Each structure stands twice: as structure tokens, then as C-alpha cells.
Image (tube, rainbow, N blue to C red):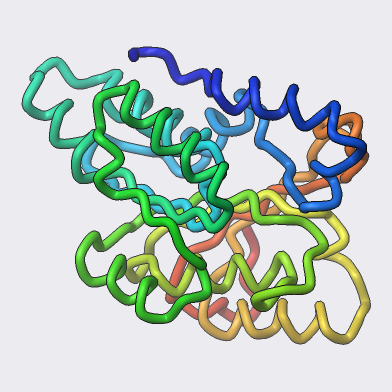
Length: 233
């Protein structure tokens, strides 16, 4: 209960490794434990933050965020409040949602703020924005998918729209999304910068998601604050 390691996610990843490439075909790239903890550090997470993961998978980011926030808290009531109110997630895949809910129940949060649904659903996003007011967003979206908006940058846009003004969004996506000259990706990057600030990009090791082989980078954003001209991180 007091451990940030996503054991159920690791079991699921192992099961998928025997499924003839189904994991890769679904765009499922489960986030390594040390990366979920790195996100918490990059966002400078505190006990008062409200964390939102629109593609929460098995709950890896939420688990690490929970443990980071309660680690410096001694008051049991405050710990209970963090678990109950400060962790919000959406997951579309039924099996993944079940694992995320189980993960959170095991750790005592009761899955109260997990939603089974589509992160592009306007009504669901608006409900979360109004009712939960998240100020921190973490995302490792499905890679190279062509449905529901599909592109990894679309997922980042959707996440940032839910965060409070000045909130911090952290995303790990294929590095090509940040550097590709493809017109669609250029326009998506421009769309992000029109409303949000890119604070920095960190390139990741090439074998981070071995054996999937996706080379990734982490982007850090300030939500709902247009990127200033001449800005340097």
C-alpha cells in the first residue's frame, strides 16, 4: 500500500509480451517506474497539487504521484484527503481501467476519481476541469494511433486544456513529434504554443521502452499560458 511500484502494470506488460505483438499494435507503451517518479520531480509535486492523467493505463503515474505527495505528510487525515481528492484519471481500454481501479483500491483510494471513458470527450473533460480543478498533468499517450484525434500531440493538447491556468503538464512521446518537419505535426506544435508554454524538452535513452524501440522525449509545459516570443527555457 505504501509502495509506488506498479506491480499490476508489470504483470500486465509481461502477459502482453506473449501476445504476438499485440502490445505494440494497440500503441500500449507502459511507463517505466523510474520515469513516473521523474515526472513527479519535474513537476515539483507537492501535497496540495491535484494530478490528472488522461490516459492513465494501469495507474503508474497516479501511484507515483500519490506516494510522492503523502511521503512528506504525517497527518493521517491529510493522507486520506490526498488519496481521495488529489488523483484523477481517465482510461478508455476496459482491461487497463480495471487494473488502474484495482491498483488504486489496493492503495486505499477507492478509485473514486477514475473515469472509464475517452480523454477527448468534451463533457468528461469539462466535468473534471470544473469538479476537480487539476493543476498537474501527466501523460504517456498511445503511440502512432489514428483514432479519436490520434496523434500524440492531440493527446497533449487535450490534457493541457483541462489544467488550471499556469498548471504544469508533463508528457513523454516519440521524439519525432517535437522535431518532425511534417506539416501536420508543425501545425499541431503551433497550436500548442498558441495557448501553452513549452518550458523544456528532455531527450530519453534510445532503449527506454525496449523492445518496442520507440525513441522518446519528455516535454514540460505551462498550461493555458501562451508561449512568449523569444522564450528560452
